Length: 285
Image 1 (spheres, rainbow, N blue to C red):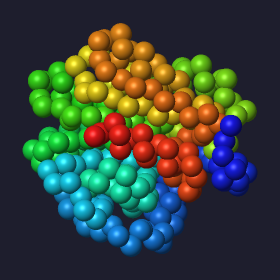
Image 2 (cartoon, rainbow, N blue to C red):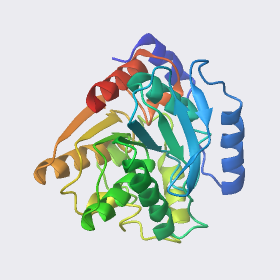
Image 3 (cartoon, rainbow, N blue to C red):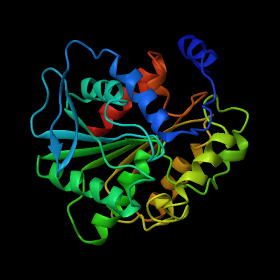
């Protein structure tokens, strides 16, 4: 059962309407996020890795030669480093590592292959920094997974650990939870996700390697931690990825959080957020 804090937060949630105007949706989200304060004990800088700019959130007493690269969600059409700076700060403090959130190029104005190229460039550059953990939420996991699959095919060095929070890695929406959780998910709806499909399928096939890397070869990837909410429409993307990694002989841990929704740690301070951060910290070591 959800904590009292989570129940209060959930009562104030609403289902996101379809983003009819992408530019306005981006500006609204980014403008609001820029006004939100970060914890006083973290620092924020704006470096670039592999030629891709972003935000680096660093905690006090950080561990040297250890980095987290966090690919933000937003359907690959919205979201930015500024929208995920709060989540990055939570990760940084929980793991005692700096967290870099890249501002990769987005669909639909950028070719899908170029979006993936940004992901590869960031990971290749960050890999040289030492121990590397890849974190991604929602559709950021599609970019991260697609980039790692391409790097694995070419025999390039991969990250040491992978953490996906509410991964959205099947743009065809074929998971059973898409129907099973239609009335349970408090933030996502069939209407909003079908509209999103209509936007991205103009530039990339829904079942292709960038939007749906779940259907691509899974073998040879780093150990993974997958976290998902029991009530979210995307839940079974995490379940199916865990099954595929296990079948391929990989290492994976799947945690389904009861009564939680899509990327719940971004919704506020509650025990379930603290639990997720603690689990991530324990996994990355």
